[in-house]
Structure formats: structure tokens, C-alpha cells
View 1 (cartoon, one colour):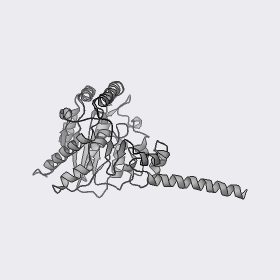
View 2 (view 1 turned 90 degrees about the vertical axis):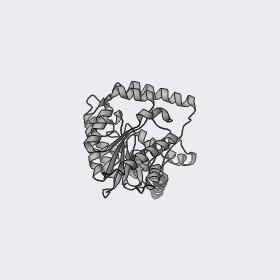
View 3 (view 1 turned 60 degrees about the vertical axis):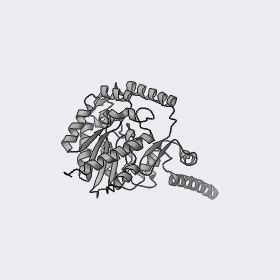
View 4 (view 1 turned 30 degrees about the vertical axis):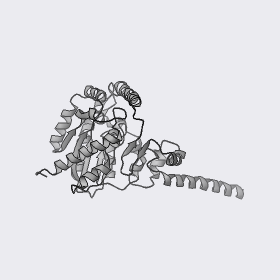
Amino acid sequence: MKKFYLKTTIFFLSIFSIISITFMLADGTSDAFYLRFTTPAQSSLILGTSRAAQAIQPKILHKILGKKNITNTFFNYSFTNANSPYGPVYYRSILKKLDPNTKNGIFILAVSPWSISSRASNPNDSVHFREANLFLDNTNYVNLNPNIFYLANSYTSLYYNILKNKITKPDIILHEDGWLEVNVPMDSKSFLDRLSRKVETYETENLPFFKYSNTRFNYLSKTITYLQKHGKVFIVRLPIHQKILDIENKSMPDFNSKIIGLSIKHNVAYLNLTTSGKDYKFTDGNHIYKTSGAIITAEIAEWISSDISKPYH
């Protein structure tokens, strides 16, 4: 019997050791989210959904603004349309990720009609918001490395893939500053295939069901108010393909007027880049390809610099 207990103990200790080592090896190749929960609290944040996660590159912001003596180090804390539309879940997570001692932060809030809409019979019922009980809602510790709570509760793949991805290097890599790099074939046929699928998804799964949520809009406003206590806020609407933009205009024709009104209310600058969509490369019409993301990030940096340098600041 003693041998049995000894063998059992050794077995479970071995399993525990393997899992522990695996958790220690988790990084930006493990999935598209984990690394954002392993870094310290941050002072300047990029917020939004996957459009912002893939488009806005913190290193470029830091490089350009640093030359203008605006030395903030940026962190991209954007996730997905499913997990980080504006609302109570995202708001609580932002508060956890922001260093409470921040005084001169810069906060870039990316917006879209989907980020202030709900797919629910009652778009203002926050209890049934789509992000409720998903990983952002369930991750209470967002500055822990390794983040065993995220890996134990929210990592959706096999732990084996943590090791496999470190060797094979997936097409999606999350950088330590929160930027999500996506590498896909960018030939014309591949792009048009992805665009066609994305347009179909938005037309059949988004447009008929998503409705403007006043609750989400108020949380966007609440987020701005909170962040203004710690620095300056900038609102951005990122470029999208014209076919996606047409769907968004059907979904919420007055979206821009709502955001302009919000920017006036809070005295924050708003940059609408959807009029220049034809100038950039997209992976699928909804997300900017990384080379165009670098260009857009540089444009945003110059715009921020120009606004900060105005006399009334």
C-alpha cells in the first residue's frame, strides 16, 4: 500500500511539475490574449476591439511621440468585439490594468458601432451582455506573470499547444506591448476570399441583430471621465473596407454624430479615419494589415502630438 501511495504521489507531482513548467513557458505565441494579463499595471492605454488590437502599434507611438518629448510608453489593451465592447466588464478590467498613480497618461479609445451595440432583445440589459462570463469578465488578476488564473480558467486550447506554438510560431503573435501581429497571405485571391466571408458574417450575423445600447454608450462616456483623471483621452474610428463601412452605416447611421457629441461633451479630440479606407491594406476588410497599421499608427501619433501642442493645453 505504501508503494501505491508513493507511486501515486510521484505521478501527481510529475503532472503538477509538467503543468507548472508549461505555464512558465506561456507567452505571446500561446494565444491572442494571455500576454496582456501578465504585464504590470500601465500608464497609457490603447482600448477597443480587435481592430485596435491589430492596427495600433505601441512601439511606433512611443518612437514618434518620444521625438516630440512626449515619452509615454503605450500598451494595447484591446481584445475583440465579443469580449471588449464598452460596458461594465471592460470598464472594470481597464481600472485594474491602469496604474492608479498615473497623472499624465495618454489614452486612445477606438470606437465602432459594434462597440456600443448589443446583440440582445434588450440592448441595455448589462446582465446579458455578450461579454458576460467570458474571459475578460472572469480574469480578476490582469498584472500577474505567470497568470495561472487565466491559464487555468480561460485558456481554451490544449496546454500542449503552449509548447507547440513556441516551436512552430503561429500566424498570430501577441507582442509584449499588447499589439497583436497577424500574418496571413495577402495575395488578391486570399484577401477577396476573406473579405467575402467577413461581409457575409456582418450582413447575416451582425446587421440584423445588433442594436444601439445607451448603456454601452454611457459606459464609454464613463470610461472617458475616469481616464481624464489620469491624463488625456483621444477617440479614434479606424479605417475599414467600404463594404464593411456600408454595413455599419446601415446599422447606425448617426454613429459619427453620437461620437462627435461625446467628444464635445468631454472636450476630447475625435479622429475619423473611415474616409480613407481605400488607402490601406486589410486582412479581411475589417482588420488593418500590419504594414498599413504602422502607417495609421504614425498618423495617430502625429495627430496626438498636434493636439497636445495646442495653446489651450
